[in-house]
Image 1 (tube, helix red, strand yellow):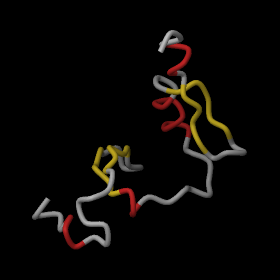
Image 2: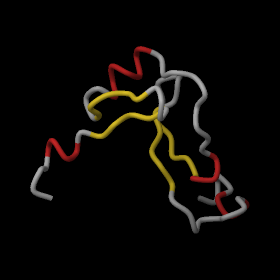
Image 3: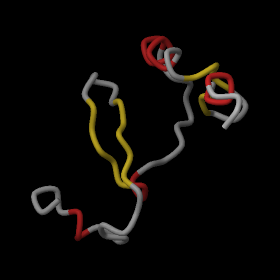
Length: 75
């Protein structure tokens, strides 16, 4: 956290951090304040990877739709 300057962010360490897949194929942690909604559709390689974890992509909502209720209907 010190190396990445987390405490210099406006919300410092007091915010959610997300594990994100990056276009170059790397995986990184991202502070919530640095996340913006993409205005373009995801590339096919991301759709294929996300298909393992999500039901589908909603172009209208610009988000992947979870399949968690399908996997765990009793929760």
